[in-house]
Image (cartoon, helix red, strand yellow):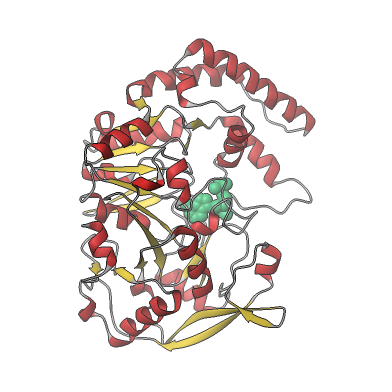
Length: 433
Ligand code: IMP
């Protein structure tokens, strides 16, 4: 089975964009299965930088790109991206397929989100303010509007009228200010339907037929496992199934058609937004990582919170996703450190454990147990072979793999595609074929 899921092993921003870009040439189709334009995949092609939020980055390599049913789509964001790609000569209309079952984000979703985040006595999640959560709320509440609905004007008008009434009732009840021109939005969305009509289809059927014909699919996760609505640091999570299981529900491809799962992890840890982060370093160490790693959000520009590699967390995400192999990114960010810390256990209620607790309250009260390893104080940037890494850097990676219990099959040593080490004989090498 040649189809692979690749996803973040931490809180997102692990550098999946570059790895997906690297792998894309070996696959026929790249598909997104969850999230929306809250994700930001940064890809460099030559000296051009692309930040794709909705469209799978494989399209930059001329690959077929699919936005699966599990994704929520903001039409404005999608059209912006289509325009950006078309402007550099990419045949978006030919390469992009959009699920007719994907749900649609409306401007009032953003308003509802703002009101909810700013409500008194509520701990803010620190969302990306893109209306993602409220759109998924409508989906699960069975009042959402899907792409297929946009294409049927009569049906759309009826569904939209009902949804708009719902939102007006909500706005009145919660005294949410802000004038919304519901008629104008409806007209805009009707036009949007027309604009994308040619790219909309049953993408589950498309993917399953492609698999039947022997074509290879790469499933690209957005966010990261610790932001998964079930397995992440609830409630400080995103509203979708970012973990590997989401690839099946969010694309309409069965688990029996998936051949492997790759996890992407930074050589350290970052997170944006609120919520527990056991290995966060609020001192000079974290600041140095932020500076060296240019750790600022691709979508919101917010400074990312930075800290050390967390073994219990990786063991947890490896189990939840069944990682066959781990890709470690941004190793070079640690090049100048005299020492690097690795969290090997959590001290909680007087005992050391490697179990990730269910509640954010418990996670907040964890005291990490650290092992300190010698730094390598030598450049790893751009290394393309395992042998080219300094001994201490190799020891660091070997230590992480042994602790987590999963091989590190690929190491990213810089943003360019060729700044990558694929470990010979690894499961990673055999999976990507
Ligand atoms: P939402 O996805 O906008 O609802 O935000 C929920 C949480 O997920 C917040 O902590 C966001 O910062 C975080 N988040 C959402 N998308 C990303 C991403 O692509 N990378 C990192 N964090 C993200």
